[in-house]
Length: 367
Image (cartoon, rainbow, N blue to C red; front, side, top):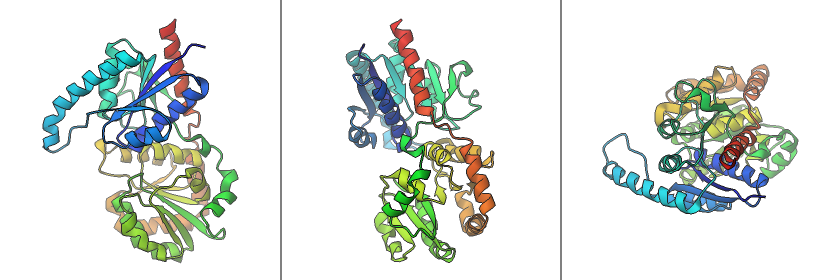
């Protein structure tokens, strides 16, 4: 069998990194002898997460433009030229069959150079409102795999295919893991369980809310698994003095924590939304207002529009959260309705479909 070579680029956040790793894992399953190279941004989390997943990574000296004037902004042209030159060297030396971008600043220079060199490129857009990097790259990309409908106002329609976002394959059948999950997290099987997800780094406003509402959860006999993020663990670990609360800076077994959960409070990053569609639990989304183009609110709204979740903005939390949460906990019919509707939006074959499209590009190039 011919040995294929794949470059994947995406990073800055887990939402860009984990889809790239999922795609690489599926490619590796199909082509065990293939060569893989990741390209990320120096000093970003992909430089640790990708090697942990077993792949080699090269870092570019690149960062995005800040919205306010900073010294880093004055360096942007130099960083961009440096990254374009290094990307050209990487492409020439590695000679990939396809280059795959999952968003983030590093994928910009790399996919731009790949396209100029005649290498087929595929971009995977996780969000319902694309970032600037993928919007720019779409003009030259051969294929654009998207997770939401109605993105033709951003991307050429003829290049788009609706695949959904790559998710961990161990989330596909979590119902069978409930008993194991209760044991793993040492939960009381007679209580309902609330899962709180603030993203890999944590979410300040969500953490403030949960700390404030601990007595509300206890009053409803609800136990809480709270992923507060590594930046906030020391600040909030005192909350574990309440027997209904357990706090984690990071959760390794996402399959088991989803299996244990009866309700979820979550940010609305693209990967989180896709995972929650797969697992089908009643969700209250609290989008981060601090991300580019406010895309978390748009991601959550796309689910809410199908009556698949509840959306609370940060500025509504103090006045509305306890009422909304109590009405959800006390309404089994509402829980069932949200659960069934969000599951209708799941695209569990996303990773396989994206890899199918990558293979088509390889075959066209080899023909």
